[in-house]
Length: 327
Image 1: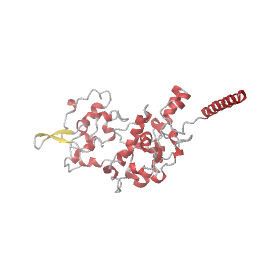
Image 2: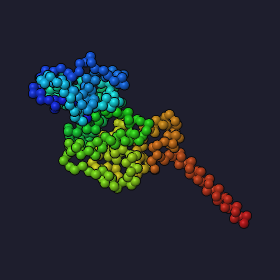
Image 3: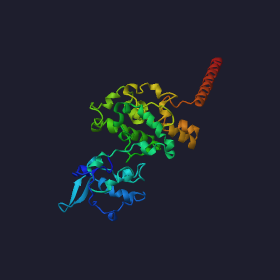
Image 4: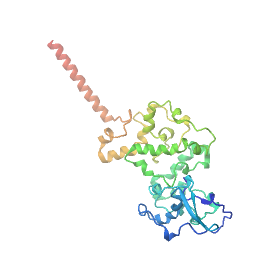
């Protein structure tokens, strides 16, 4: 989905320095939906949303002296609700896009405008230091996506700046986090039109590719793709961006179903830490939705269970001994 991208694909604008004609709607006529007016740049952004926020747009053709209504290309539509829920909701469109887009029709050369990547804004800024964008960039450079596709594979391939919502990763509902993150991967890996933007290979059947996985449906619902298809380089980044080649993907059960579980170090790390800090240790261990067979073992609980079992065993032996003596 490309936001405020060129409508020049609809009109032939020969010269790159063409003077923009009248916009479709004058600024003073623009009214912002009250649901979005709480955002400081909503009035300014509405100039773009008047066309890019719905399935059609209208303009006055000075040549034919008529109002023309056309269908908006689907990839150029951005719903207001999605943008104003995203992390970039307080930005103006022209913070990232050329001010020339304020004129209509848009000059054809604007279609060649490059998109900013994450580090263009977030790199070297103390305000965003806690997110470790530089480390994310280093991890990504070692990933199979970067090695195979080089500069053709950008942040935008996975993270659309117009709709990306990082708070989904800290959602109270872990299932929503899994669904949200997996949808990022499936956006290409289950859509042949997007998949073949980078390769001519036939898109693989993901269900068949994962036939080896026991209880496949449960795994796919309860685990993110990146749990098995990434490698942690350091603990500073919340989500690993080092995507591995398929031959190096995790396939051994014990890598998740053990006390050194990969899931406990990534998917459930934030959730368990939050529960322990707010509801106590036992709540974090015993009662939560992050239970993984073999991964939730605790030394203290192991010792207690062995002691209880020993007392039960001793009691049974004593009872049996008295039964034998009385007989």
